[in-house]
Length: 360
Image (tube, rainbow, N blue to C red):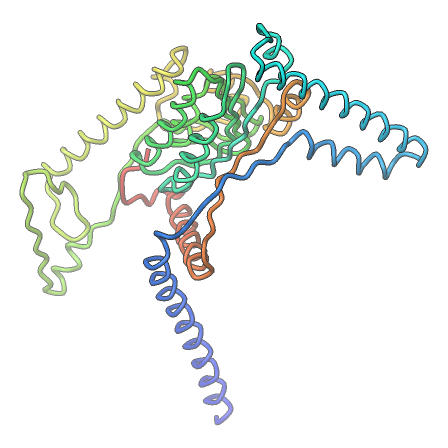
């Protein structure tokens, strides 16, 4: 009996320690965020993909070739790089002297800028995306291209509307925009993808879900059962339509349905504007399709992975990955980890249809 109480007390102490630790991390993270958010500084980082692929090829060559052959390959590569550097210096000299008469543009390789967008319910990655696009647009020239590797199940309409508008900025500068979907671009994710000049998808990527939903629980009867009153005062007939705690009305349900239908109409008009060849009534049912079926329905333009597309681009262009990186203090990083855990839980609920707000 004594051992039971000892074990129980030890378990309770461990549980209390874990709970207190979590609360401390949350409180410290929130306070740190409020203190240092204004002082956070970010910067743009670029990776030359051509060089990265060459480095992997050289490493593999060193492992599978005999030493003499490898040395010969390495010598030839250095000679080729020297010629390319010489050609670039010549092109730069011509461009600064103004004597090129179009020759400089011909000697300069086009560039491909690769951006990543990992979407969540609130499209938080748009904060980085907008800075990356601003940086790229300050440097692009005719003939360049922007590739966005996109992954998103969708989320809040206004958040993904802003993300789509950021991609629209690229097209307004007459720069080619390609969206690559390796896993999923559904709902708000497809809202972003449809802006592109080309949509590329892996054969089993998930696309579509052109629909809108709003769903929430209502606890009004539970409150009444326990004699708990809920008061809500609004100005404006439809300031609130459905609520979680108040008593909902048929008029409120009708108004919310009207708003959902109008949001869906706007979504369909947006997709039609950017992909006029779609049979919008066929695809705007809220369904999703794998890549091959999406190609048959004209939701995408080609089946390929982002890796294959970018590797091919390296043969004719200089390819750069562009990332906006912020210096985030440790306490705030802990807060972000907790937030991501909550978002992950919400995403699982979202995938099961347990929505509480508008989601495109």
